[in-house]
Amino acid sequence: MAQSGYKNGLKKTHKGFWAFKIRVGRKTKMGTFVTTRLETAKKLLDQTRDDLLRQQEGLEIKLTVGEAMDYWLESRYGNAKHLNRAIYAFNRARPVLGQVQVRRLTQADIIAFKRTLLEPADPDWRPLAPTTVNIALRYLAVAINWAVKNKKIAENPLKQKPYEPVPEDNRPFLVRDDVIPFLMKVDAIGNAHHQVRRAHDQHRGGHLHPDSDG
Image (cartoon, rainbow, N blue to C red):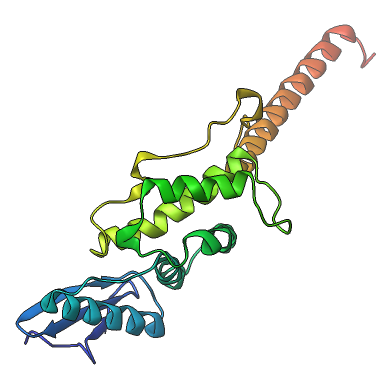
């Protein structure tokens, strides 16, 4: 049975996500929302239903950048550190891009947003370093890419990567996520060196005192 297991268009998968199946008019759409929250899945299903209705009636899908960011955040459930970074990036984007329709978003809009990060007009916002600007742009690109995958927009305007060049002297030798593994390797090398040095000293001591037992 085609609708087997679905309740109000939703069904939980073995991975804990929410599969959906929805029929509007003569068109049926199926897929999976990458979220474990039922409330979020219901919102995404409503959005999908609205989109199908608009498509059938020849209306334009009026999803804004702010809405795309919100839907992306609601569908995330993992690393809190990355969520906090994304929320910070999105908060900086909302005053400039929040009300822009995703379908109307252009490369010029992205460049204007980048300029506000580097040289904010609001005295309450501090200028961001080029590396931080690029991180904010990447999170925005991920959220907009969600809109691409969900057929809200044909192409991601950030696909051309309008990132800010970073001077060589300002580029970190290691990014933050690499620091701990790097330190663990250094620690392991240090321990190995200590063991070799200790064995060498013991060996050397034996040669210096061959008659130490009398």
